[in-house]
Structure formats: structure tokens, C-alpha cells
Length: 135
Image (cartoon, rainbow, N blue to C red; front, top):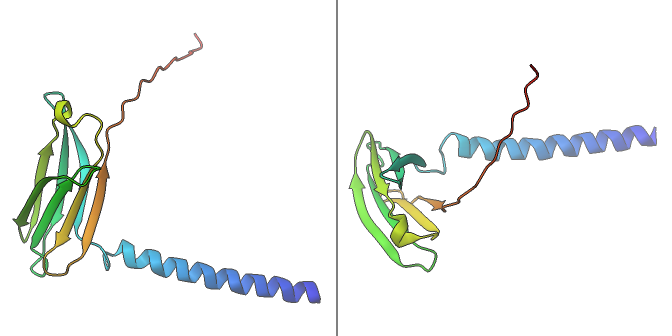
């Protein structure tokens, strides 16, 4: 009987813990606390990395402030962009000047004050693959 009560108590606390975690994930997943922006690696152009910033502007949030800084805090780029529909902004990174610098992209919605921060770092990997195939 005592073991049964302990099991019920553990089950109850587990359910409560899971419910709170799910509610927090739902708020972020549906964009309640986030900006409608996405930063992604778009490939290379003339052997230089191309970073693409995608916006999903709305009537409520149509002006964004973009600030790009390096790891020492030096501002490399700062501008305001405007758009009510989906639009993009591309950044071509000169790796000869930047080297292995870690860049921080900070995007702030002017009206809401919400901020999304992305970190971009360059990594070089040498991979070797060997396939063994039965003939």
C-alpha cells in the first residue's frame, strides 16, 4: 500500500512537470515570444560564405533593426530594414578579412522591442569516408 502511494505521488509530479515544460515549448513554437526572422547559411558565392536573413513582416511588425558585431563587440554592420511581407537580406562574408571571427547578428523589432540573436562561426572540417561494398 505504501509503495502504491509513492508511485502515485511520483506519477503526479511527473505529469505536473511535463505539463509545464509543454506549455513553455508551445509559447515559443507559436511565435508568442519570438520575432518572425530566420538566419541561415545559403551557400558560397565566389568562395565566400553567403548568409541569408529571412523576414516574415506583418503590419504590426514591419521595421527591423539589424546589427552585426564581432566577438570583441566591434559593430561591422548596422541598418534598419522595412517590409510588411516576406523579404530577405543577404550578407556576403569576406573570409580573408574576417578569418575565424565569430559574428553575432542581432535583429530587433522596432515596434515590439523583441530581439532575436544569432551567432555565426566558421568551421572547417576535413572528412574522409571509406565505403566497403560486398561484390
